[in-house]
Image 1 (cartoon, rainbow, N blue to C red):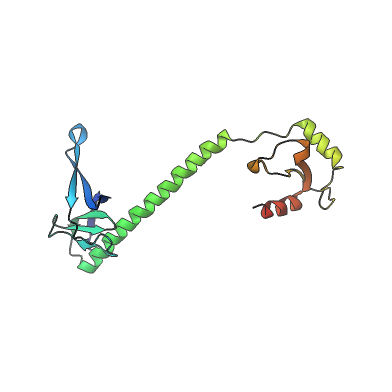
Image 2: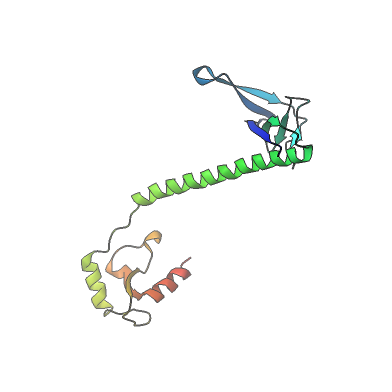
Length: 180
């Protein structure tokens, strides 16, 4: 089986109709980044990888604003190489989308713990239970009762007697599905 080793050379950035690629020179604390100006004649919107070896660097391809360096190509034909480059870039894009979603989920989680809802007080619960006579205000069932916010907390509803009612589980779920 032939092997291909690819490395991301850099991500192309567009500023004022010019295209740049950051290049890190050196390692560790002595490393510095320089911006290389790229030719305007390249097809940056191509739907397949294009070789930029003639204008830039041997074994380098451009795809989706990524410069990909072919480190090792042991006998892979051109079609397979282009396919592998495309896969490499698309896989990186997919990974970035996954990471972005995870970060958003972590941020949402931290916001959610700060926005914990208050418990309905015992006095409000007793008042509502007595007022609604221990049964669902929609269907009069006395099975699987839940305290329901008439106006949801997420829409500004409060934990007051006027905004709490008794609903059975089925009526509460059907109400929840209809709130837009």
